[in-house]
Image (cartoon, rainbow, N blue to C red):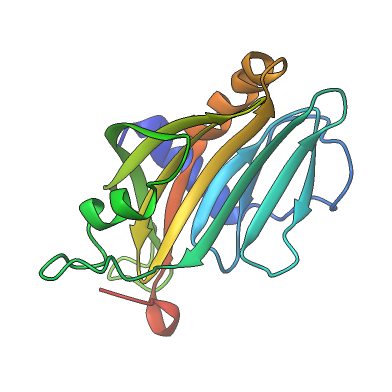
Length: 189
C-alpha cells in the first residue's frame, strides 16, 4: 500500500457520510459503517444508502449509470475441499451470463479501532476484477471476500454512457479499501 493510500484511509476513517440524495459538489471520502469498505464518492453523483443497509448506490443525473458498493453474505461454493473464503470460491460465485473475470488484483485492507498502537494498520487483500455485458448494458467491478461476506464495487451503465461513467468509476476504484474494525467489533482474525 502506498503512503498516499494509507493517508487516504486515515481520512476515510474520520469521514462522515454526506446527506443522501444531494449531488456531490466535490469528491467526498466515505466509510460504510457496516459493509466493511471505504471509498471516495465522485463529484457530480448522487449518493443513496441501499434499503437493506448492505451498501450504497451512486447515480448520475445526466447518464444512465449506477455505481454500487455493497457487502453480501458469502454463499457456499459447493466444491468439496474449496473453502468459501478463498479467491477461487469467489471466482465461482462471480460466474454467470455476461461475466468475464479480468484479473486477480490486490486492494487495500485497513484494520481500524483497538489495536496494539490504537492507530489504523494497513495491508492488502486478494480481489478479482471483472467485466460484462448483456443486451445494451455493460458493467465492470471488483469483488473481494472477507469475514463471511463478498464485498463488491461495481459500475453498470448503458453502452452509450459506459466510457464516460468509467472515468468517475476509476476514481472510486483507486480509493476503494476494505475496512475491519478492531476490538469487540472485529468480526474475524
